[in-house]
Image: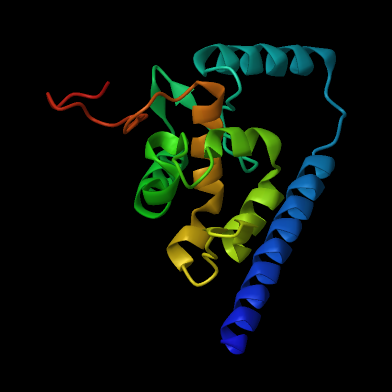
Length: 183
């Protein structure tokens, strides 16, 4: 029993360490890009960014870069966000209800992602949480499938919380329709 708890803490610490390293790498990459663009280039980049934002729903990004980023185009989601939906359905739905709206014994995750940072969200999944006697969020530290999809689950729930992703199974951008053509 004690070794199981210790190994779960090591996994949780490892997950948090990976998140810190990934955040540092992202920040370093963004800092290395330099700010020496000409006025014409800056205007072109601004126009391109504005067009991308018009094509995606509010609160989403055109490219997944940080946990919680997602893309919605014409009601369809990016592959990572869809993977988050699948992981949520397989591992979280039984307690947190359909689409993350909560149940009689587990809270709404749609509200949770509004209040918690990604690091707090990931820590809760990896280490579990005791809310009150009889209400316990189990640790998923031993479940590699869940741990490898934490960012995707977070992105899916952020999109649901913002109202950009509707209830039910989302369709994937570029997915072929049932008639055989791309939509």
